[in-house]
Image (cartoon, rainbow, N blue to C red):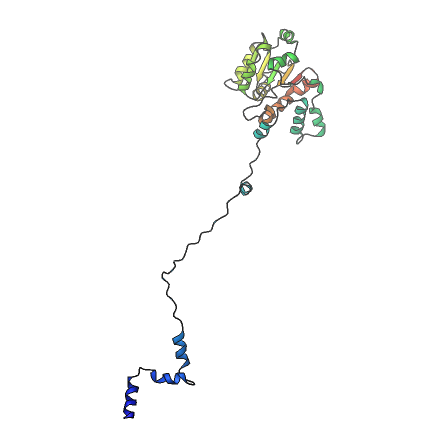
Length: 278
């Protein structure tokens, strides 16, 4: 009877219960099985995180960095002259320009021959004069000279400037000085060389106002004789829209020096011709 009850009890126990008594005793149960039962189950995250985009933020450019990277602008002569105070031209300025111009292709002896004597220079304009007032100061006996002048193909006074428009301005500003003097335009704009030669051949002219290019051409073709010339005035201090003086322009400077070599230098050394810087 007792054996039958024991068998019934063993059958009614769940699987693994038979080993439970041994687990309480020494050396009972499988260690791997026990470790698997005790391992924690990882918790599932509610939402999977999406990968985030990465943006590189560049540092802001400072004013100092901008000035370093920016190209330096070259200073123009216009910018320099606009900030500088105007200074009247002097005979030394002309002498220096001549020396710089000829020094590359002339010997020391030739350079000495090209030097103008100080006695040939008249008082320079100090920027306070109009053209008429300046000419009255350097040539107080103009009326007498004008009356005694009777040679054709020549002038008593020659005024050299940088452009035809400037020449017309100077002629208009001569009213107070010229009186009954005959004035001739010596520039290329709308006037042919042959027309000017014929004009100089027909009548006596006292004053000539023009550009160095046309004056040089008239001398070369024999239309203008420099021997009777008494005064040569350069429109030295006037500046154009770019603030350039007449002698700052290479082409004009070259033509002026060519005129000087066509007889002006020898007349200055003989003291029959005077130079003025207006």
